[in-house]
Amino acid sequence: MAVDVLLGLQWGDEGKGKIVDVLSPHYDLIARFQGGPNAGHTLEFNNQKYVLNTIPSGIFNKNAMNLIGNGVVIDPITLKKELDNLKANGFDPVGDKKLAIARKAHLILPTHQLLDAASESNMGVDKIGSTLKGIGPTYMDKTGRNGLRVGDILLPDFKERYAKLVAKHRSILSHYSKIPDFSEKEVAFFNAIEFLKMIPQVDSEHFVNQYLCEGKSVLAEGAQGTMLDIDFGSYPFVTSSNTTAAGACTGLGVAPKNIGSVIGIFKAYCTRVGSGPFPTELENETGEELRKVGHEFGATTGRPRRCGWIDLPALRYAIMLNGVTEMVMTKADVLSGFETIYSCTHYKYQDETIDYMPYDINAVKTEPVFEAIKGWKEDITGIRQTSEIPVDLQNYINYLEKHLKVPIKFLSVGPDRDQTLTLY
Ligand code: GDP
Ligand code: IMO
Ligand code: MG
Image (cartoon, rainbow, N blue to C red; front, side, top):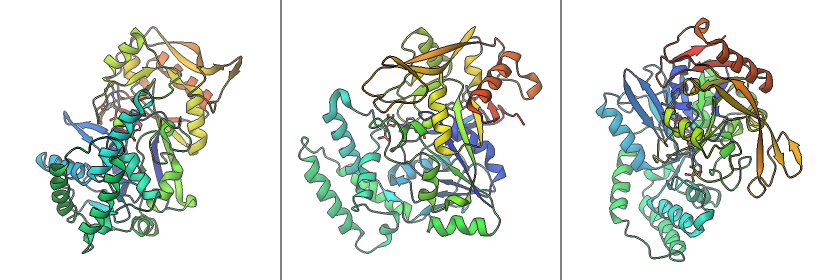
């Protein structure tokens, strides 16, 4: 058996949560491998909407086990809130023994969030547009070899280790401005740490490989998107982890030869939240229209998402980096009624026409070259059969498959679990 990976091909919010939930009945284990509560994964069924930040999106499937991998950074306060909220809605993954957490996953401290905020406000107009969840500073402590891990909470000297790291953070924070009072947050943190002790801790590398040895199926759930990858995204306007397929290997402890299908997910158009280059962005009425119809507001921060047309060079890059074997297109319903839609095939960059993302994309204007495509008028939110797909939408699917050279296996026509078509 191999680990299949589902990950975003754009700048996040492609609909990963919804599709992982849809695919989860086919898997024995669903595992998050990177990121943290900067993620907001939305899924809907039975007229109920859930937003998950840290918990894998397989949690609503009665049979699958869920794992938060070693590559994830965990804010105990957010995790407790998520689990409390699920319990209030009749789901108890801890009580049902459906959730395990990697003891090597790193902890987000209240002071990591203060550092995030201080760093962002210090950068002024150059800020990253971080979700301010403490992601960057936590990964910095991980690679700086100062971090605290989930397994540490069981050590008798955890409080001393915590105090030592906080003292370091205080000294950094004092260079920015007055340190805000975080005593209440600290109480909530230690309260959540006690709660965290009730979640079984595992070594994700042994846990996942045991599943594979037993012939069980595993789906790795990505967070953010390829264009936010720390190495390959539009640095520095990125997140602090490897969002690409390689991240599933390090974030769970899986060898590359044990990766199976790589399912790449993208919207029928494109969005980005936060700062940074976005070549196909529409800063006009059409962009507004996409935002309105697509309800393009961040699931974690509520910020309006920047909207634009689909970007083929960026998608091709993402497909190459991840070794995508099949794709999912979401939010096709949002484009219903647009007489013409546009696809970016190339960029104009300095005096050239190029079909890749240039290194200095942050500094030099990269103008999209668009191809016009006939839109479809039909409301597609109710379709459930491939035979009901409007001809012009089918033409758009064929066009994308031709240009991206990877099949689109699933088509999503609305936020609900049921609004999903298998194309082949
Ligand atoms: P994720 O971070 O990749 O899981 O995506 P988000 O949950 O942040 O954002 C995707 C948004 O689009 C959510 O509000 C979903 O409920 C919604 N969504 C997912 N698929 C579709 C779709 O096919 N059509 C529409 N209209 N909404 C969708
Ligand atoms: P999901 O998993 C969209 C963006 C932030 C910011 C940059 C860095 O829901 O797709 P960070 O908080 O990591 O320091 O922010 O990355 N960002 C996301 N954008 N979806 C996400 O997650 C994101 N997680 C982070 O807006 O630009
Ligand atoms: Mg999201």
